[in-house]
Length: 632
Image 1: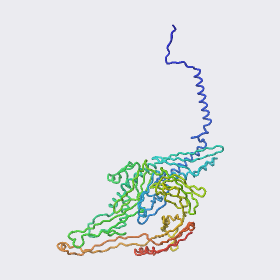
Image 2: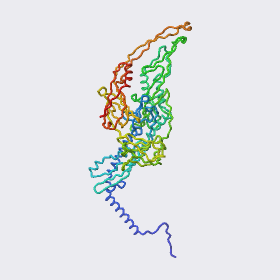
Image 3: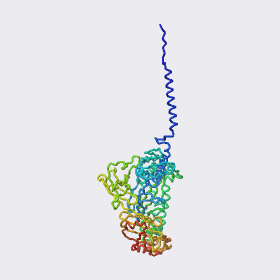
Image 4: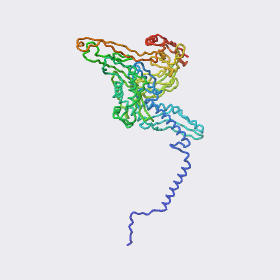
C-alpha cells in the first residue's frame, strides 16, 4: 500500500499570485504619494484652498478680538454691554440707576430708585449671551481686510451675521453663521460657518457673583456688618455719667460711619483659599459661604450716600443728649447721667468684585439700614445655575411689529421683549415698501413690554400681551443731542446742575463735567442750580446753662435746691459751597429748536451768603426766579 503523510496546519500557496498583489499595492501607494505632493498646495482645512486660509484665519481672529472686548464689558458692567438709560436719584434716595465707578457707569443689581422704590435689576446668563450676540453681529461686519485687498484678494461679507453664543465656565463658545466669500483672480472660496472658542472665566465668575448676590438677598450680610459699624463708630444707645450734656458733632459722626464702612467692607471675605488670616479675630470678616474665586467689596466716601440721624435734639451741626439727675427732686441719686438714643437710616453703594484681577466680574448693590435695623427683603429667590429657566428659549407666540417715526415714516429699529424680569432680543425691523416690519416668534406673556431702539430716536415702549395680540405699532420720537450752557448775570457759570423734567423721565446736565443732554419735542420743567464758594463760618462758641439741682444731705430730701451752671462748647463749623443762583421754568420745546444743537439758560444770581440767615433766604428767593431759554 502506498504510504500517506498527514499534514496539519499548512496549505499550499500560489506564489505567483502573491507577488502580483504586492505589485498592485506598491503602485497604489506610489500614485497616492505623487498625487499628494502634486496637489498639497491646492487644498486647506475644511475644503478651503490653502491660499485663502489666511483670510479666513484673520476673520476668526477679528471675531475673537471683538468677543474679548465684549466679554470684558460684560464683566466690568455687571453683565451688560448695552447700558440702559440713566435714571437720576433724588434727595430721598440719592442713587441713580447706575454707579459711576471710576468714570464707567455700572447698573445696580439692587438699589433704591429716586421715588423710594426698591429695584432689583440683576442679569441672567441668557441675557449676557444675547447681549454678546447682538454686540458681535454688529461689530464683526467692520473687520478690516485692507491688507488682503493689497494682495489681490476681494472679500464679500454679509451686512449682519447670525451669532450664537454659549457661555461656559472657562470659555465662551461662538458660532458665527456668516457667508464669507473670497475671490482672487480666477479662484474663489466660500465659508458659511465659523466656530471660535475664547478662553474666559466669564461663566465661572458670573456663577460665583450670583452666589454672593443671592447670599446678600437672602441674609443681608452687608447690612449686618453695617449695623456693627454704626454701633461701633457712632453713638446709638448709651449713657454718659455726667451732669453736662453729651454733645457730638453731626458731621464728624457721619464721616466716622463712612470711614468705618470703607475699612470694614474691604475686610469682608468669603470662605476660600485666596487669603490667609493673620489673627483669629479676623474670622469675624469671613462670610459662611464657600467660593472658588476671590471676592472683594468696595465702598467710597465719594459715592452718593444717605446717612440720616434722628433724635430729640439732632440737627445738621450737633447731636445733644441732655443730662438727667440735676433736676429738682433727683438729688437723692447722688449723680447725673446723660442717656441717648439716636436712630439712623443708612444707604450706601457697595461694589462687589469677583475674580483674580486678570479677569473680573463686578456689580453694585445698595446696603440699606432702616431705623437701626438691616433691610427686610422679600424677593423671589431664583436658581440661576446651570438649570436656569430662560423664558427667551420658549418662543411659542407670533408677532408682527411695525416701527415708525411721528410722521409715520418707516424706521428700522432693534426690538426686545420684556416679560417678568427677563428681556429677549427678538430681532430688528426691516424697511420694505412703506413699512418697517419684524415678523418673528416671541414668548407668550401677559402685559409684557415691546421696546424699540433706533439711533437718533428716543426709546419706544408699548405694552404687548403676546398670548392675545399679534400686531403692534411702535412710534419712535426723534431725539436730539444738545450742548447745555448756563449764564448767570451774563457770565458763564462754572458749577451748575440742570434738570429737564418730562412726564416720562428726566435728563440731567452737570456742568462742567457733562454738559450734553438728549431731548425730544415736548413739555419740560427746567430747573437750574448754580453753586459757588461761600464765606459762611459758624465760629466756635460757648454757652453757659444753669439748672437747679438738689442740695446734698437732709435739705435735699425736703426739696431744697441750689443753682449749678456748666458750659457747652460748640465747635467751629464751615459751609464750603452753597446755592448762588438759579431758577425754574416750564416750556414746550419744539423739534426745530432742538435741531440747533445748543441750549443756553440765562439765570439771575443770588446774594452771596455770609450767614445762615442769608443762606436760608436765598432758597426762598430761588423758588420765585425764572429761567431764560435760548436755542442756538
